[in-house]
Length: 394
Image 1 (cartoon, rainbow, N blue to C red):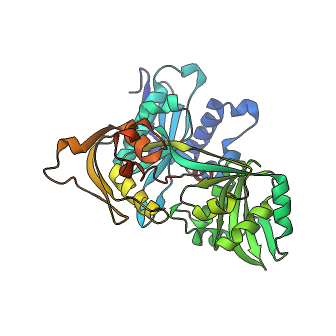
Image 2 (image 1 turned 180 degrees about the horizontal axis):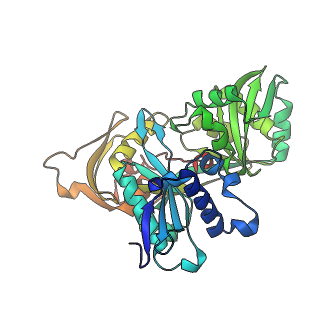
Image 3 (image 1 turned 90 degrees about the horizontal axis):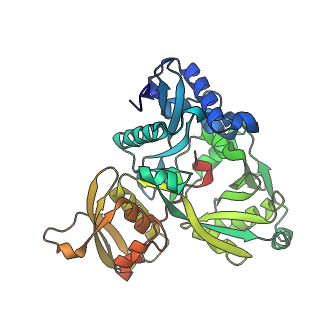
């Protein structure tokens, strides 16, 4: 029981799927104040609440003992990733809310705790969400992940656009353009990327009031970009680096000045923007909860070794994690990383013990205080390049 008079129900248990999703959508719109603002989750997040979607199947509810109505919710939506050659099972947490008149009864804590426990049972490597650090750190989430923000002035973009051949064009992705959707799904070769079904590309990339654009050269697709709410370029990918400047230049006709978010591993986009930007900053990408540090660290070290020189060294860690206590050794030899068991007989003084929050801070953020407790060589490996990106947010 969540609290007296309420119980926790997994959304997959409802037999009438359509009715469950209608009730869920109404609850989500209510608790987020959308009924007053005119917003609607069906428009905001078509990838979750659009026609034919079953968002309720991936949500934990608190229901009333009187009439079995939904009164609180916490969505845990699967968004799996590929990091290098490693599959990472992940979930995005979204639509966490409680009816206004029932708040401060422990219902939010109950649905979140149940959602976290279910993700652990299902073998998630990590989870992410957008929200208050103060609110969600109680469930194991910490501000983490690295993202760079670059600003290109309108003047710079106008000059850049003048040099772009007329053979390049930029077209908004349409819902019925299956060929362009397949191009996007099949040509995303970023070293860390979400796995996307071509049939869902349009709904994914238009969520959060975003507009996806496809870059063409002489009619052949060369890349794409996503502009969120007319403010930020949240994804910019091309089949070859030579097409990045044309993509950015043509985006200036959509939005100028141009604000671009760049993951750390995207060195081509970073290097393209660096000499052009008027300003830039480094920030945290999301709120992250890690359930399997060993797998995540191993996969992201492989990604980082693909674009950065790693100093040789060794780091032995014990982590008191959310899902379990983990012990492993991180080692870099001749620039090649490995994550293995701690060697038998290792001096306890050579092993650092980390809380869950400190482990997230060390591995996935810049300049966390805990980084001063390890050798400079090991500290140089971090932060690891975990980046969710707005198109994957839920």
